[in-house]
Length: 581
Image 1 (cartoon, rainbow, N blue to C red):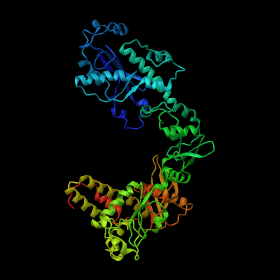
Image 2 (image 1 turned 180 degrees about the horizontal axis):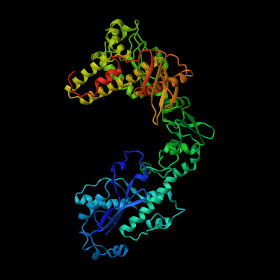
Image 3 (image 1 turned 90 degrees about the vertical axis):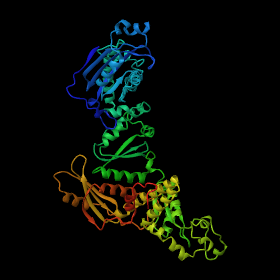
Image 4 (image 1 turned 180 degrees about the vertical axis):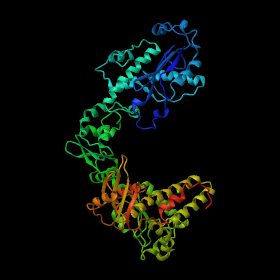
């Protein structure tokens, strides 16, 4: 066995190789290119007879590893001996895999493993670890066969064997079915392939790992559309031949983001289809990333581009309202008309009808609200019989004349308070119900109550934050920009009225004075929300940005109610079934 040597002067930083760390440049990645010679083709049945590997980073060879391995059970067939040149006489005095494998694992620790037809080589190494009860480190693995197929077409080579690619690229070392020389040839092929990927904009390990073949050629043919896109914050729009907007996106660097749609790492089927239809890219530069996000929301709501999922069916938001009847009942609605007729503030918006229905059923259960849909008037009251809910004590029984209107409204006064924004009774009643269900070992039902309560609180908390910010006539705020300077924003009634970016030499006061003079006038909001309120998403975005921003001026009182949804959502926390009330 020839001892492994390492010409690297510094320790390998294994953290840079994790896929959890986004954007690892390929020239910073440590690769260990490995090749094996074996007694056969089946891992687990055949054994390793030789391991050869080289360690590289940035195109420089840092070290080499080479060792013959004595098989413990398998026999080297005449065919394999003729192919590799490795005979029993050569391996009789070689160490066993039990001795060689730990040395190789130490040599490759923290590196990305590379092999030509990697499933074969890595399969043998993993199988050997399992057999010897050694820990397999689960390294990132690249296969030069797969990578070469992405960038070396059949018009260049007849196949993607190592010998064919080596001859095509003119590598200094020719493969000869010996482990070290084959590993060296594979290393040269790897770097030639990476150079080609660099030409397509693939420069990081994460991008390389997500490369897919489908649609790449078509996207590359449209890469000229990215020319001229400015490298600054803004909104970009892909247009078809009739200048219809297909897709809208935003970025802090539009040039870099738009280029990404044309390289091999973009593998979303919808985006490949969109790029094929696109004929133009239009850009709207913005002062900073916040303004870009706001502009994106507004444009998607206005233009409804077909390839933006958020633009589809915005009317699907659901609300819970009390009906305008003598004896009000709860219902789930989507229309503005139903919202306007409700005698109480609607609860919502819920992102799906299913979640809204679950909350409605919870409210029907913990409050004695009418459930049946019968229209009750003074004239027909005597003809009605108690509904099922009334018979089991879950309804006050207005349908059978058990309760008059004044008494009924008094019984559901706490429900009206919930609709008005006071969630104290909801949290109390839900906690009591969960405790009773837990005592009865009905844990699944208790979990349903918990989930519905959290859904009600989280939905109402979002709406509560939107209303609170919309009540403020004006807020001036700033936050540090990602590349220095300050991002300034003028927010009026929950809408971004003006935006600017102040450099280090510009004063904040002067920056705000300049943009306030031309800021958009925003009217005060109405009392009731609209079923398709496109401004709510923008207001929630601004509220989130303000949490980390510095406020310089606030007109009015910006606060949340102490009995509101935000308070109870934070105070309730994770509810454990069986906790005492």
